[in-house]
Length: 393
Ligand SMILES: [Ca+2]
Image 1 (cartoon, rainbow, N blue to C red):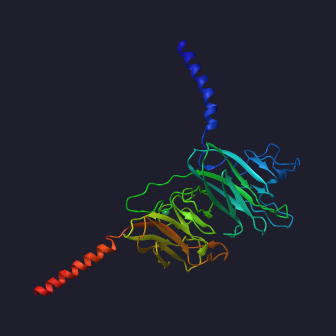
Image 2 (cartoon, rainbow, N blue to C red; image 1 turned 90 degrees about the horizontal axis):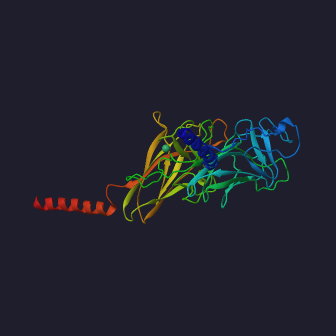
Image 3 (tube, rainbow, N blue to C red; image 1 turned 135 degrees about the vertical axis):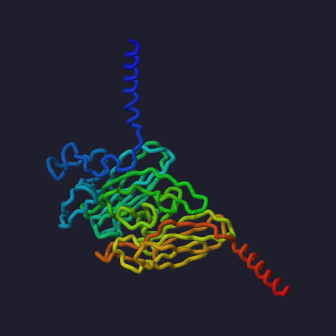
């Protein structure tokens, strides 16, 4: 008797506590609640036209003119609306926004991946914020011919529950203009441990934002000048245009499963400040490759290490999609900037408009066998040894 009542009491306590736990459960890596907008509103999808009026979007709060759009739908100009994934997406009108609360770990850094398309040729941009962090993503540049791209931004969680807000800050004359967004996912970022023999953090780009297995477009990383909160831990995108984060499921990746494709010419720069010791001689080595995405050659990168800059052309080899390149430099300070950009503006040979470029992976900065001074001392010793021998003979 006593035993069964104890069990009942436990069950009761469990039932009391469990819902509490479930509301506090951390948002898992991957799609946020109804992040693909495929969940059916209680009054049906607007295309079913049962009732006029604002559409409720399950799991999201909306402000202003937010519409659920369907693939195959046309705007008044006859242009087909682009729906990045599945059959539904949302379009944000002037000053409109959608938001939902996500449960995160205070103090941790998260990357948000989302797909976006512009609907009109005008300047369109999207503001993604997790207050107080906020970032505007420029949708003006079409990186690929499909008309949409996945993007990623990042934030540091200042609370355990934070609002994730997508807002169209634009003011278009045409109410049918405004960015379309879809496939919103979140991922908690981990900064990798640093190996002893390499000063570069996240040297193989294996740590980065969420990527959808079924999406073949990579993820664009827009400007991010804050190395502490970067969707690509350790790295900054310090230029006006984006670089593309690519995966080995859809691209030729030199090392591991992820790499970076420099798709914006001189306007797409990735960089990192690495720890160095002044006056020591270092080598920067990296893999320079072709993404296997029909990118038209020539491909070349400009690599920077401290005060050294060197240009490397990708020379195709039938056995490999990448080659090793290296730059020697003498560190001048405790921290040295390394950076890469694409020398050319490349496009794909099949559509002549999708942007592409050289791939960089497995970036290493390590001590050369001796510092320049030590080399000079050794050379000096060698010379005096021979001079001594000559004198003896
Ligand atoms: Ca890699």
